[in-house]
Image 1: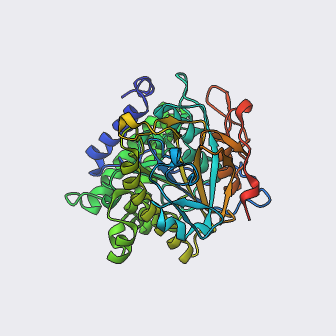
Image 2: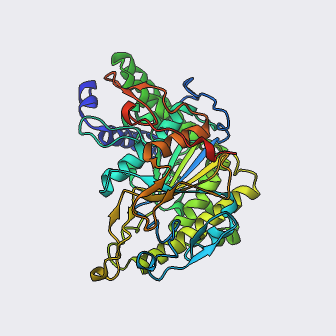
Image 3: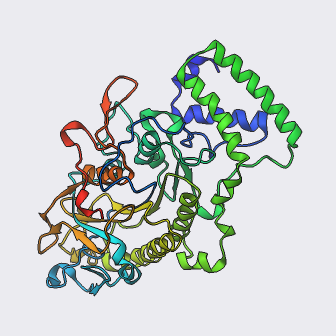
Length: 440
């Protein structure tokens, strides 16, 4: 492939070219590692904030489909027309939660529940895009995902592991956007499968692997000397980083089967719970940003039965994760968030088996650890949960708060290759403001 052809294919095409080359010449697939956020530590963009800068890692729990705030974190016990059959329970914090979250109620002293989230995006794909990137989708550019921003601004903590990993989620949520492949996330499928194809094939001896690597290195250098462009150099360097990862002792962090059976069972025998366990292992080993998704929240039909089932999975995985991080001394340095693209309507649609429709005007999110003062709620919805009554929080505000926890300046301008200015906290006219009052 010549340099013009290399640039004419899209990002996935360039990755596939590298994967095929690795499989053919090295006897190993680098698929999990290409675009793994294997960037050099730091870009000098981190800015300390008073009260923030305590977090070193983020675990982003993405509730795909639009989680019903009214049936989880913002119950309305005095309004049965809105609340339906769901009861409220007291917590260890200064608020109530749904009966579907008994485990979360027990660790509420670590939580800040935000009941005043608001967005203008009422469609799933656009809402998820905004949630992950602080920008609305545009046809002319792909914005970096939050994990890519964190790696770009904060740098890697463990230089032999990826800085950004996703599990159970849309691979697009691992996108580096215009930052380039070195800041992208590693998208994993089932957490129990670990980092697949990251070891040398048994049919290739160590001596043969070294010989093939030397040949590949010579070819890469020749190609790079002939075509001296940033993209060619970036992809060439991924070979070196991938081999470093393959030889890392910390690679075992991806293997949750090394955990005791009792610990695995505590998180839940499902992909979300096991993803939470994987996230704990990864941040424990120095990975900056881990996303784990739990879908199925699009409850247009039979809302109460479906939310109860989804909440049971969320409750076990999340509450166990927070308690485990605290026990290991990692909660203060790890910001754990629960986020979703929008909420559900207060109106119960009886003709849809008691369903709830999309509702971006008001919904809920949660933060724990990372310097957050627990046992509190921030903002309020009105009596029906339809509108924000106090302290509105936009998606950009929420993401700016994540940046604040990490000590990152969310307003720092980073230019795209075309010279356009972008910020972690969103466009200048919509720039988020971190919720600094929720920190201890």
